[in-house]
Length: 246
Image 1: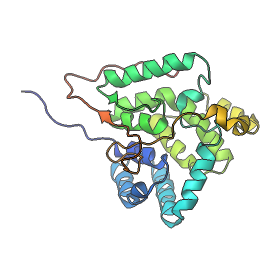
Image 2: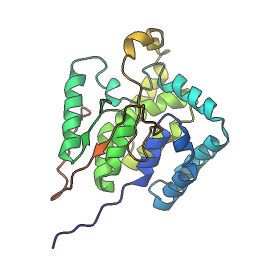
Image 3: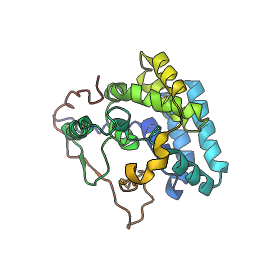
Image 4: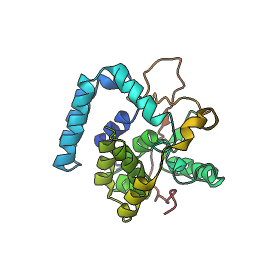
């Protein structure tokens, strides 16, 4: 007899994905549900669950326009904390294009298809994908990306950003990189983000929206949607290969 049991998504990763998205009304209206999901799964240590709960509480009492302005100023006005992971691995080199192809292939081998033009290395998207795997598989997937995640997290911590907790949580889930001390030293020695003065050149891509059910978008029909097309699976999930340079 065929096992038709549906694997439950990893809610903690979905919550982190949502909180890394532009803070729209739909997301802000689900804060209580997010906090409950993280506490229910208990995939994070107690101290990180408390810190994540405190972040969600901060969202509740902060003017949405302030949240949105802070988000744009942080993530959309430079490359140092870009949420596109390969930005930190390959920059503008030709290797980035092949890495994108490899990542899309990874998604497809796991039974997912992207139906819009968002770059596949967008971290909230990657977390949505990982959230649909088993906990073991999700940890392996994020383990490949964790040096990049740690670098972004250290840069956010140096800025005193509220978003740093989300990157701490991802490292608690996937495991901290072995070279964390080197990553911290690198982040501490960096100067200002020089790309801020070249925004027209570096940020010609379309604004990110993420309108899969429960995703990052606002749900407005005028925005470019991103959908996960998840065919019925047969057999086991294919083994993953690293697309983050080992």
